[in-house]
Length: 311
Ligand SMILES: Nc1ncnc2c1ncn2[C@@H]1O[C@H](COP(=O)(O)OP(=O)(O)OP(=O)(O)O)[C@@H](O)[C@H]1O
Image (cartoon, rainbow, N blue to C red; front, side, top):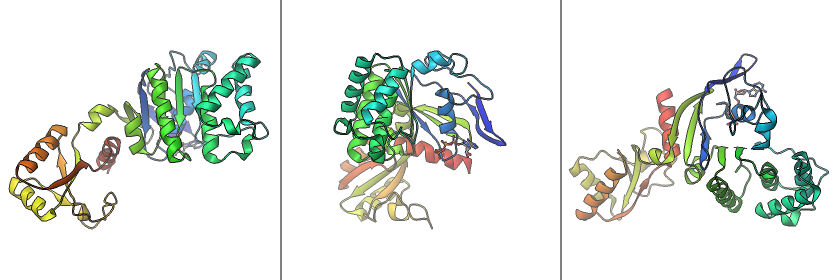
């Protein structure tokens, strides 16, 4: 609640308040320098806040650090490994730090190496791992003590597409087992498929908390494409729906979301029901629609509208 932390004159976290709930994946979203990493470091007990209170699995990471740490798995954005240790030794060493017996630690390490698909590299020194492989080892390290709360800073960075899918499936599973998962990421389209809730931060402040379901149902831009763009444009004009060609979405500014001028148009619609109504009317009027889809992901849309408000 109202957490604050400065570095000299820089207010990295000015006033952040939010709740990430068990059984859900919460996305921490914000531009570069918004204070996400600083906040996660405080939640992980690695930085002390100047003011405000934090609770992780019911424990204060500062005054009840042992209790909080025992329940928290922390994955930093860049994973510094002990280079001379093998991947398995990294995990057994962490297991020992969490008071696992040697056999247990070894069993847990092997299980986690399988989970993150690093079993073939179990005996390789950690320094030879690629960036993405190190990320996966970092995730395994965060899971050694079976924490209730997972704090993940940009966990998908450096991962190839297959590993990103694996990460998503794993994090959904961990949440479905009742854990609290807090993930910061810039890849908003990926978070759309992963997260249940989102906290938007900017300049060290919480600017919005939202569920993905409500973000998805909000006013947003949709893209429509028909076999014949002229017929589509004429029908939209007749029905009084304001639209713009994707190719010239913002006058003077190229529309980076449009891969090419495929004749599609963009319309602003209040919610999913409005979209369904428009599609129904277009089909009944004989407009040869080929595709209708949101132009941006739900989180991206909220993010962009917040940025817009700030201008
Ligand atoms: N140790 C530090 N010393 C001085 N300034 C810092 C320190 N750590 C962070 N900052 C500053 O605090 C602000 C917030 O940084 P932080 O790393 O928390 O942002 P972020 O949201 O994680 O950014 P990114 O998305 O780029 O990772 C930035 O202005 C940053 O320069």
